[in-house]
Length: 119
Image 1 (spheres, one colour):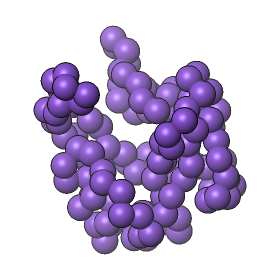
Image 2 (tube, helix red, strand yellow):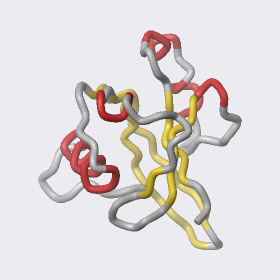
Image 3 (cartoon, helix red, strand yellow):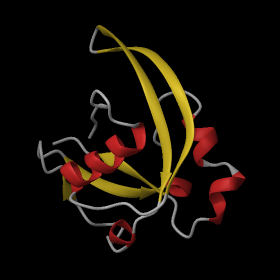
């Protein structure tokens, strides 16, 4: 799952649009946690991205069981929600793990991230 910010679109508007396009869910309040630059290599090719990292609230997402298998609507990739506290998966870009485990986010009733499964 991923996407980009279209010309003239705010990061928050892009986030909301991508969740509708890719998972068919709407978001409630969102909070920008950080903006991180990430220079990396993937499959032998260099990459460079600016990642906007948000905390989100969504009644529609909260209603999805943690063991549910979903598919990204516009590409079909299998995805699922996983509990932040129960995963040892690496998070990118660097520093995201620290943000996800920060005390400020511990007030949320459900701390999950979207995991993209191998097809």
